[in-house]
Length: 254
Image (cartoon, rainbow, N blue to C red; front, side, top):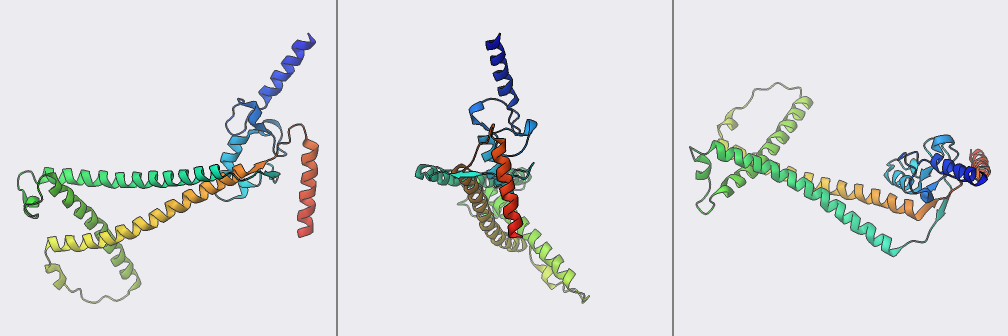
């Protein structure tokens, strides 16, 4: 009977240790109690906590518990060259993945426009006549779709710029209509050139943002694994002493 009661208490104790993030009680060796939270919020998987710390954009969740506001007690571990290489590899993989997704999305839009142009030009053949004989088949409509997409981007950019200029100017002078005599093809080419410039600039800015985002995220993940949080299971008195010490230090600083 005593053996059975001991086993039941051990089972109940392990079942009560449920991760407050994934709400699972598997892998009990990875469950820690890093802060002053009690009840169902007292336990958390170290892996789940590191993921949360690495994804916290503001940085406060890296050091503090979001529930009880306790500052985690961290322990530094030696840096690993292999982990650093893996981090760099993940960084390049993520950047290439996102860049490839954007390129595929643009290609999908171009192909849709190309098929639409081919469908609209199936009888007249006006689009084919705009290109030299060296360019044949579907390449005609693909290049036309690229130019059309750039023209749309350029046209939208010029409309935005024109509206912004009108909002700054209060004059109501006469409109000069001499520029309206240009042909549709020339107008599309001008819009395409503007769209090309805008596309190149936007691509550079987007690539820089992707690189910065993944570098920051992977750096936080590496730091979360480098500075691990100390476990205080069944040692709540030590946590309370740390809390008093933190409060004393904060009072002295103010």
